[in-house]
Length: 272
Ligand SMILES: NC(=O)c1ccc[n+]([C@@H]2O[C@H](COP(=O)([O-])OP(=O)(O)OC[C@H]3O[C@@H](n4cnc5c(N)ncnc54)[C@H](O)[C@@H]3O)[C@@H](O)[C@H]2O)c1
Image 1 (tube, helix red, strand yellow):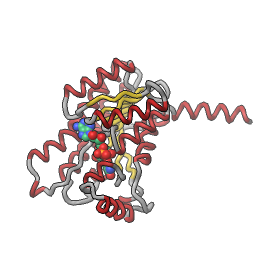
Image 2 (cartoon, rainbow, N blue to C red):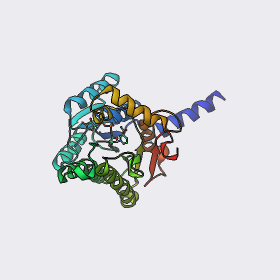
Image 3 (spheres, protein in one colour):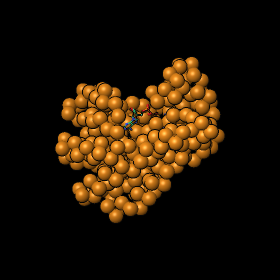
Image 4 (cartoon, rainbow, N blue to C red):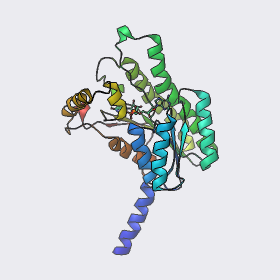
């Protein structure tokens, strides 16, 4: 009996584990991306922290390296810039030899009503959220295709891609709608390479980014998260770990037959 349990556990550890895998996580210097990097590293993956802020990325890499030496690398990356994305992919391969998992988490969510939105406001949000996802996805998928052993791409979208949550996020909501369709199209194109492409759609998650959106005022942050939390079926806002758990599953062998999907993780907000 004990032997059988051990066998089952070893099988499940392998099914859900990421030992010998290499993951690139964009935007992993803070918030949801930080949580994702911690979970992937905890499951055994080596992780590249690809963030616009090298300081923030280096802090996360230090944390992961303290837990498992030489398992993490921080690279300053601007996902909206083709050359920067290419450099990150090249340096990731130089350091870890391969890329098995890409998580496109980097994203921005400034608020501006359409009536006051400049073309520059619009373009910047599309450049980071949609173009950035495309550039990283293309670079990683081509590398995975070259490696010939499949791969996992997980895009962090938003429930705002399905239903606008507030006024002022039209550019953001449109960019995340684009991410959903890019996810499905890429899943179609890279299926033959055994590369799965899925998206996770978070509801309200308490992060540094949301704190900045509420202008850094702790009162406004608490009010925004409390009112959103009260409107969820589960009665709370989400945590980076809630999203990291979805990503960990989609990155694992266990999710090998799932592709082109958009997984909502919002405490039941959309059904409430
Ligand atoms: N927090 C939420 O409630 C929520 C809800 C739905 C979706 N999301 C999505 O989750 C993702 C992460 O959000 P968060 O709340 O953790 O944000 P955050 O601001 O806390 O973290 C985002 C990280 O991305 C980095 N970044 C920004 N622009 C970049 C660029 N051009 N290149 C590389 N890195 C860049 C930032 O430096 C930062 O470290 C975003 O895509 C966001 O749209 C967040």
